[in-house]
Amino acid sequence: MTLGTIIAIVLGIAVLVFLIFGFSSGWNNLWERVTAFGGTGNNVDTIVQACALRCSSGDKYNFCTANQTLKIGDGDPIIKSCNDLTEYVDSCPAIIC
Image (cartoon, rainbow, N blue to C red; front, side, top):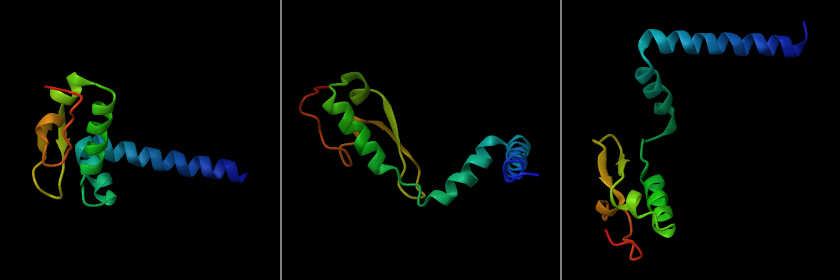
């Protein structure tokens, strides 16, 4: 057998195990286990960047009304719009909500 065949077989078995575990234990459970390796679960930087992009592009609807899910550590997520997350996100003088 060639090296490419062996790699394809190993990858195929890994995908099969992943699918079996996902269907048997539930996809949410699997996703929580996968994201646990990612660190503390904070996404403040991501939300701040998304809100800044919405401000700079003049996306009034999404800045004022679209909910963001802000995760800080192990606490409950904060679900608010960019306009309501003034503790974490800079205000946007270009957009008046």
